[in-house]
Image 1 (cartoon, rainbow, N blue to C red):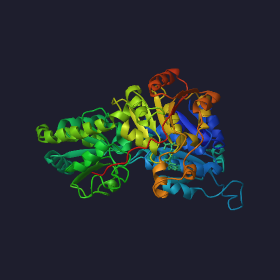
Image 2: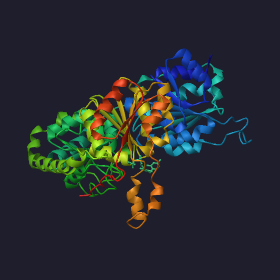
Image 3: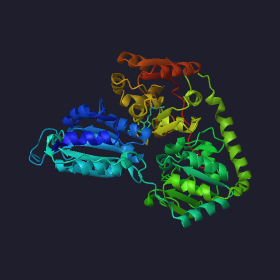
Image 4: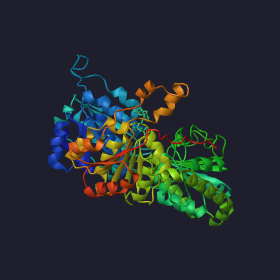
Length: 557
Ligand SMILES: Cc1ncc(C[n+]2csc(CCOP(=O)(O)OP(=O)(O)O)c2C)c(N)n1
């Protein structure tokens, strides 16, 4: 006989979980057993949403499920935090406390039925009502989170703090190593469908590959680059797929879609065939299906049958793991067909050169207050070769998606799938998952404010991530929208809707015990970044930037 707590601790340890993120009090006996039986770090945070984002960052950095927890009253905060993981197909496993059948419907303190709220943000949403079910349910949580297109799962444990974990039963921990990381399965493509796809790809004169998060979860970057080189095909990526090919690679045209690089949108718009690999071809990646236009001949490889052909009619659709499909394409392809695309590559190079000419002055600008484009260029040059770069949404996503380049295939890139405030805690989670790699997070000041309390968590656990804040004392991405709302020109009153007090975040960070630095001249940024990384402490670089700097809008042709 063992307790549920002993079983759960052993299972999490057995699956290789190194950190869990939560606000107490939930599964307290499990935490005590974790201390006795495992080396799992139990990171308690200042909010459940931040705990979910940390677990998400941990998962995206390591391809291992990230685990977060909340007691019953924090459950909806945790559910809110799973939304980004759901949108980004990130394998986050959430545990919450739930209702006790003996007392439900009697107005128990803090209690309501949380289960329905997890429905839209999980692949699987289940309750554990008998301690005998710990092994099979927790095992299933890992199976669902990691397989197919990965995603969050939720398990609610009986008792508002999950007190079911103190009960005993004749159970044994179950661990299936295959499901300890993504991908557990690599489905093989149908050879005929793959042949059809390859034939189209080789015959095309102006093809482009658009690769996304699915290819990233499949770890398909190296093979993607090889295929592109072998067949002379330019590569655009979604924001989720940005680290599949270094931005400095001669065949990389950048991120395509809404938060994008102009050259990528122009290349995809000019292509005579688009091959989607591991991307849902959703609104963000296609700029609301304008790039490419619906009707452009298209191919698609995806691990999810329902993704194939959802948004573009296809010449060929292949159900498979991206890495396996790419390996087989490389084996079967006719290398001589690359010659046909020499004029297209020339055109693509021209489009990329035009982008560099147009944005070069801003990327190199010495202006004060600092231009965000210049921070992006500094990060391109100075982020270490093996770093993980974590980026918030909104303006942060636009600036970095369009203006920042990864230099090496060892660098990683993760981005908020839409939630402002995600990046700072996600960066801390990423650092927990990969303590030996530098982690550099880029967020605006509005993004940092959401979870600024987690600076204390970072200091307490010495989570040595570096956070770069694009501090313009505002959420100035909203400026353009309010200009429109006010008929073209804003009143000074309108600025109340998107501006803040100018705060010195370096001082805040220093007071909390982190390394805080303020940068007011672009030329000082590189030294600050280097010092922050070398310090091996949680560090924050507060960069004072231009409130009037607005990122360029996406082009559709
Ligand atoms: C949860 C959430 N609420 C609201 C938004 C809408 N939103 C997008 S960007 C933004 C402001 C961004 O401000 P900041 O991070 O400071 O960057 P800046 O625009 O100043 O560069 C807002 C409010 C969002 N993306 N997510």
